[in-house]
Length: 566
Image 1 (tube, one colour):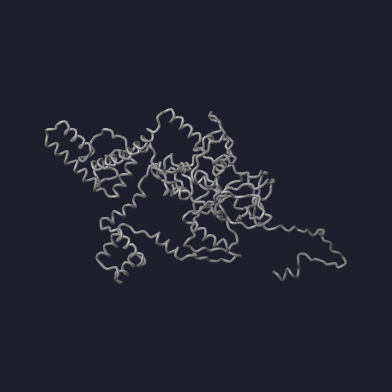
Image 2 (cartoon, rainbow, N blue to C red):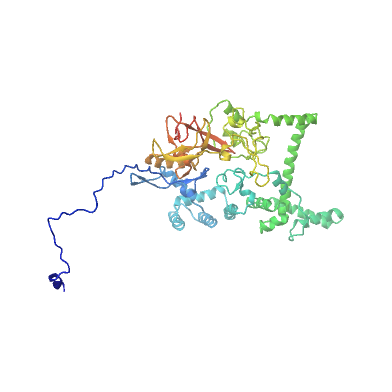
């Protein structure tokens, strides 16, 4: 078939060399494509409008870090091997049964024996040193077999159900706050104390050991003085009560406090729900009234002291005038920490931890020792000499050195300052709309400026202002992860290899790292001639870093500040 087609083809093309071949498409001109610069590389980050505590999974202490330098992976081990061992020891927990087993083996056998030590090491899959250290801890506590179980049961308090107010943060005004959960003490207000120590209602007997039986016996004893048997029975019950009071263990005392928070002065409910099998209703009633006697003694001492002070004033009218005058002049009575700042005494910034001093703060107060003022979040009374009293400026006048808040790098607190109030709503629901005239609440009201991102004229990406700015005008807050000093040092080792850093010192305990989480201010570049400056401010007890315009800045101008001033 193929040979047949070759002999007789379907079409024959004839070529004529005299004919010229012309291309149907004309020749196109060359086009020069302009060179486009490659966009600067950037690290992926998450936007956050406030400082966030670092998550446990993001810790780098005791871990190996892998970084990429010029496309090559490099591994960085922990800078301190001792830190790794300490972290392992902290994460090591022994259960109740493990404590009892180690104690029994240590009592019956000699832990110096190599066979015993190797057997325990294989059984627990731990180092011998960890087991010996745990045994020595139990030995120092001088606990026996029963006490070991009791000591281990203390851990159950961490999972004990709490009242909702326990989880409410008075500084953030929200529940389950992660930022202040470790540094917010539990403060008993007068309202809570009245609930704990109010008189019990009349109720039915909950059991054969209910305290109401004791009341019946005592009432019968008063009505029938000649009945020797009843009198003897009442005395026996009272003696049993005093003996039972001395038999309360620390675990049972803590359980009682938990029950008092949940059920108030209802000894029946406390014994039934919290101390089941440990204490009877009569035991709880006796212990409760023993506590009342101690509280009454303290109240008597406090009232006697105040009575002596009141007797010094002969006129009630003078006392009223004196209180009014003290309220008007309270804003000029400064604690020692504020006086040092006003006298321009250099201070190292310390982390604020609310104190629980009673009845007043002394030299051992953590706020006083750190050079901080006591805040309204502390447990000390309002008459504390170290407590900051806020300002009493006229509306809109908190912008100069006459304002104690402004002059000490503090934002006005609407819960503390008298004229710096706030109101919710804009009037759309019928409420009165009031806008705050205070100009010293930029952090609290988040009055930050519009910031744009663009290619920097210095290096990589940069931050640019959307509007023109005046000198000392507030730009915004520098946010990021709150990491410890040790954590920041480990992260700095990786940043030194990569050639950049986002760490910003906050105080003696924390550093802000905006490498993984932050806002647009993380793109501010360093300059020897900056147009912005950073300032540490105290906002509702928290220390924050704010950025302000160092001079008049034009619209669209890139923002710079000096990384290490001085």
